[in-house]
Image (tube, one colour):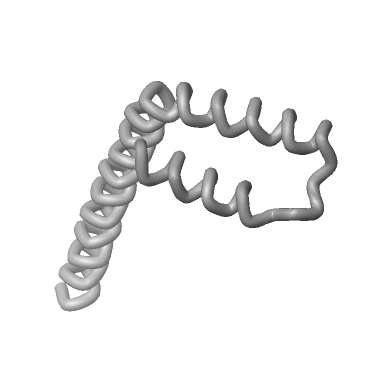
Length: 75
């Protein structure tokens, strides 16, 4: 989390074209994103694992279908 915040902070400080209002809004976004990151990350991980599990099941089912089709053609 500190790496993400420090990266955003570095980009933010380098930008010299922001108005005062844009800087305030940017600070707000950086603060909210940094605070919510520990909450969002586990949900994103669970979603990724669900997709991986689903794709693994689909790959096994596809392989079984191919094997079944191949054995029916040779019989």
